[in-house]
Length: 299
View 1 (cartoon, rainbow, N blue to C red):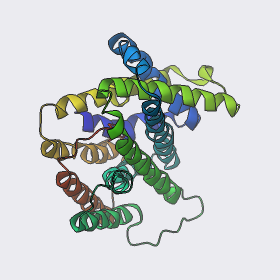
View 2: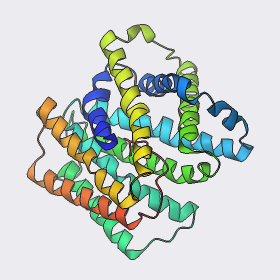
View 3: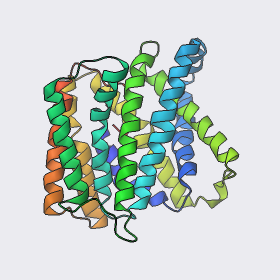
View 4: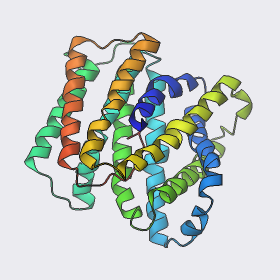
């Protein structure tokens, strides 16, 4: 259910906020869920107050990478494609585990096997075919596909970084309080950036339909899907969760076709299959690593 909700958000909900400023959308996508969490997680403030300085630094980095940079990048990518093959952007975000494991090897000195390198290479081949088919990666005039792919890859790298950094954070906080703190910090950082850059808070520009979409995102991918995801993880093995997460690309392709009439080409289908297969094998190979960050679309 969580993975399907992430697919729904990436293809159906967030793209329909394209008339708003990207950074403003990042603020709303964190501030609204943070407000919704208050009745249920208000006790998190005392736990956060007990954090040491180094733990606050980690939480700040998680909020910066997974919150500000990751969300900004994926929202920017979804806005750029203008409802054309939104599922491609969502599928590219599935590269997150590759970035997470590679970064873990650098920061946490986790060992990388030759098997992982082979699967990662297969995932990258699939990502290329999914994005460009057999064409060279050159953007035609007015074509935003290359820029959207670059932003989607930056989002995957950012969310992967947040996953690795979150391993340190979850040593002192459970996922509920960590999520609460991250959404709160990301909201404050986005607000500061809006004010510093002169954008302000154009709340009057948000239409009733857009408010409904933002509330829907807050109840699903913003917080609801994350808690569903971790609730499921406490009751199934990581191997099972890796298979269940295939609902994300599946739902993205189905919703993109059903609501936007977007169909993947033959080489794109091959790329999607290679990408999803490789990432699933990566996830299964690292099944002993407990996931720590539900961003992403999530992911």
